[in-house]
Length: 90
Image 1 (cartoon, helix red, strand yellow):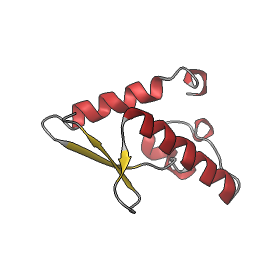
Image 2 (image 1 turned 180 degrees about the horizontal axis):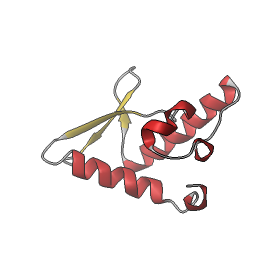
Image 3 (image 1 turned 135 degrees about the vertical axis):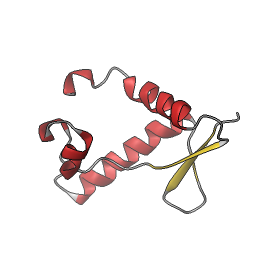
Image 4 (image 1 turned 90 degrees about the vertical axis):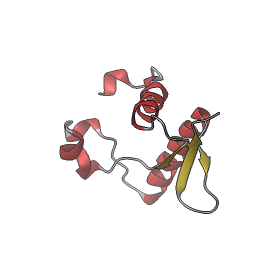
């Protein structure tokens, strides 16, 4: 929800998800990309809660911000692929 943005809860929630879903694994791999607006029904939230990127440039900027966000948690890019990995054993 928009009222929870800016409180830095995203990294905490993402790390908790990785810890719960990746229990016993040594590596978590993710495709880090902004959620699409048409995914509101799948996520179970109102469509107006999801950001709308009107231009390709806006989408690229949002993707770069999100990837920087996940790099702060420890995710690293896997070579030249679009996937990022987090070593859970460290």
